[in-house]
Amino acid sequence: MGHCPSVTDDANIELLPANAGPSGPAGDRGKPGCCPGSADASLRRPGPTSEGRLQHTAQWNLRFSLAPQGTQLAPGMTAGLTRCRDGFRMNSSAVRYPAVLHALNSRNYRLFFGGQGLSLLGNWMTLTASAWLIYELSRNPLYVGLLGFANQIPMLLLAPLGGIWGDRVNRQRLMWWLNLLCSAQSVTLALFAYTGHLTVGWLLALSALRGLINAFEFPTRQAFIVDLVAAKADLPNAIALNSSLFNVSRLIGPAIAGWLIATQGPEVCYALDAVSYVGILASLLTMRTLPRLAPAKPAHPLADLLAGWNYVRASALLRPPLLLVPLVAFAGFTTSILAPVFARDIFHGTSVTLGQMYSAVGAGALVSALLLAGRKSGDGLAHWVTRGSFALMVGQVGFALSPALPLAFVCLAANGFGAVLCMAGCNTLIQARVADDKRSRVMGLFAMGQGLFPLGSLFAGAVAAAAGPRTAIAVSALIMGVATIFFARHADRFHGDRLPSRPMPLPSDSAT
Image 1 (cartoon, rainbow, N blue to C red):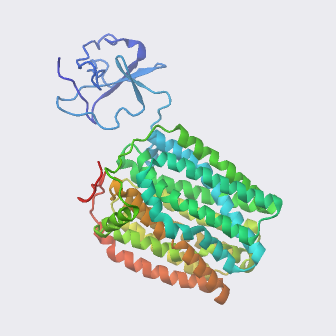
Image 2: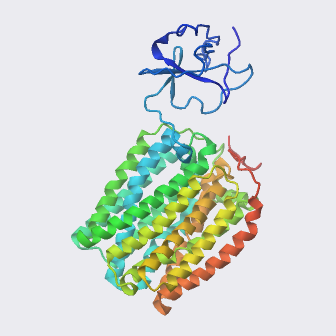
Image 3: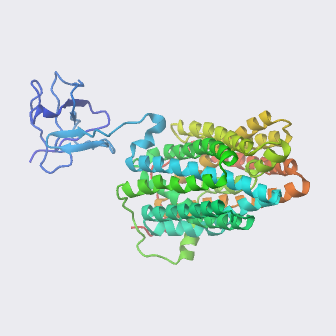
């Protein structure tokens, strides 16, 4: 048998009509020259008169010019193609996305992205409805803080265990069941609201239930995104696109919720949230099966947890972002927590005003997410995280001092811009450096850091009840100033550090 030819990244690409036959059109005849059964058995050299020529017909075969012997097929080069008898035929559904969206070239990620978008929109409608309703029922800012506490405290306590579970089981299946439980929780909220039985106590209890589900869903989802992306070089873009999607939902969802609360009632928001899970559940069912490497011998959960903790301790580049996240979670979201108090009592608005305030945060966050999505590499990302922390602090100071609503909107946008730069930036810095078999556990620690949000929420509510909402936000701005100085001192460690496409595990890892 002859030597099998191969192609390289700079191979010339030729598109020929599908009915050209094995020998091709005139002027392009020749033998395939490949071994039978080879993965690249249909590659052959194009003729001199057809090199690089695109012939417009309804159906095409994709063939590559031969590279020198010994070169290898570039990973991902046949994405969107189907191998046929005498070439590769381009799938009719294959679409190549521009650089800012290149993670969408992975089919599984594209399905997840579309399904999650609808679900996130419903989530923000529920969050807005609950925040407005609990303040309407209680007229006490402490209960606004308690709502955030109830929703997030399970994340602080259980997220590392959720990460262990995500490393042990099929993440695709686990994500489906967790999202089904989220939908059931939204259905329960809608039924209580429609029947008039939704009290402060039930709101807190059902928010805690959602937080319990999220404690397992969040670290699993963060690790699952890596499974969905075919090329690991697309991971930073996938994380940034996920953040963009989250913040588009934050921009649109609260505005819709504010109008629905004023015209239809909060129960409609809950019902729409329940229906929104159809998209993510369907996308998870239609994904291609994702192979996973399992641990050779499952260890005790506490041993797994300790292994993840020791892994982080051994990495000087994982510690700074994992320490910044809890500081931002504790003090960086005070403006959003106390937004119902500002909307009703300080700016004398309605639920529509609250929706506009949340949308202002989403607008700033979306700009930040698009900025991250447009970055071609991780170089300098740590310095952008520092700038985000500073912008977050400035936004808080401005909001605390705002005499009028328009200025408050600007400060809220700055707050959202900085928060996403911090959280999504830290997420990228961590995900690009963590070993695959430790990913869910490390993201469990990341989620645990975010789990300090309920303590910050409770703290903000208590200070607002005792000294006023403006004072509560000013205190949070002071904490963010300390966080900014802390991370800025470590940002130079990341300078010139190349992001590995697939980080290697520590020597103690027992993955097969």
